Length: 160
Image (cartoon, rainbow, N blue to C red; front, side, top):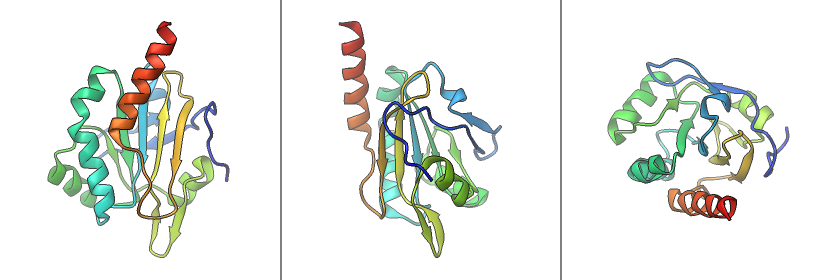
């Protein structure tokens, strides 16, 4: 297990969205800034708040060309219900193997019941980690306002 740090290339990871075709990360996000969120599960109020916040910021992120994907160990039906409840329009993967995610990204795993702890990554258009946020519990996670500010800052420094 290795934590991902700024400058590291995000490892190859496949997520399976509800009723969708498998998404190969980071390749599916190439050419865009991106946010990859691992959330604890639909039962977690903090995770629900984070997902809703990213949905509310969807238009602002989309205008900046920022793609968002999320993933948990929840099964497909639970994930489908979560997407419906919060009207999520970004890809949300289900049935993640927590041990594999831990091994390739360093995300912390709760042992019983097994779930991923909140983890977030901001990737640059080449698939490299710009920011990694690891949480060992319910709080401490990426928020869309910080992502918008970061992407705006990075774009302004590239233009200068």
